[in-house]
Image (cartoon, rainbow, N blue to C red; front, side, top):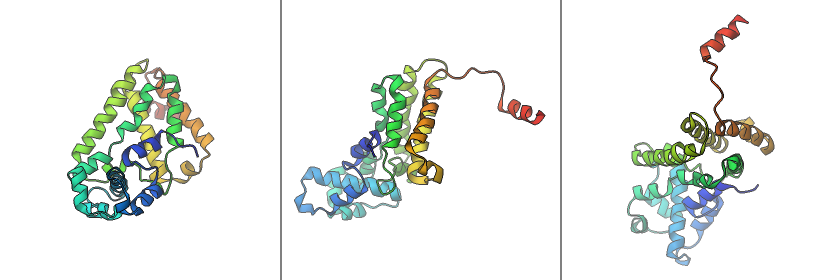
Length: 231
């Protein structure tokens, strides 16, 4: 399967491509690693553990043990457990490349993102490190700021028509929700659908959000329900 921008984010966070590569990096004897490689291995172990167990369920000793180094080295490289968490829990940057895409190419970019994301056995979804960690207000605030900057401001400014900021945020919500459903919740239809079928529906929805909003005919959801009842 072709690797898309999602894999770029996994490399950005961890320095490795997937869970198996992280395990291989961790198994490499510590004395055979450079300082840079050790930092990469520690980020890989941290990203995996924070994503799988959350902040509270992960200890510095666990991370260091996965890499075969002393916990003191984690503090030496990153300063604190919280600083390491903040280092590996960013997700907003994964969407920044779309800002360089022509608007008409954004459906292609998003489809590549979703078709190329890791599946079962790879790293947990990068946003899970934040969602599974209570009390990480700073990380949540940073995540909100990243998405607001990329979607609410910069992407919205490129869209024609009304409600551009809302449409841009709906696009972010739909893409993030779809990726979480495919990688973590894994409902049968969404997981088993052929890529071509899934892409067809994704592309249609993305194009609606990127284009002008449908005209408001003045009818509400209640009007629709009453009309259906009259039939």
